[in-house]
Length: 98
Image (cartoon, rainbow, N blue to C red; front, side, top):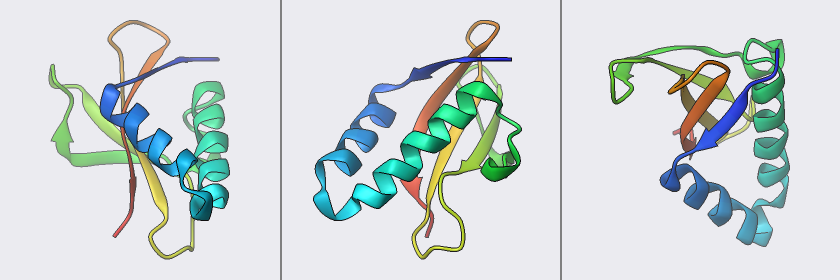
């Protein structure tokens, strides 16, 4: 079941920042791969997707966290919610885990 990814301006900016930093090329590849897996199957085991209960989407949507990297210091995470339409995932943050 494929989903269309909708990236918010802040998510696009974060991805561009990672892409433009030569020192983060490995991380950029991991984020790209994770976004591809997310669009193909949000429950892919490699993403370790789980509910992130601390926040909700703009209309009260459940927010989820997916791993772009694992077992890495400052590993990148992708935050998203389902919507605004069926088969659409809105990615609103791509950020290093602290």
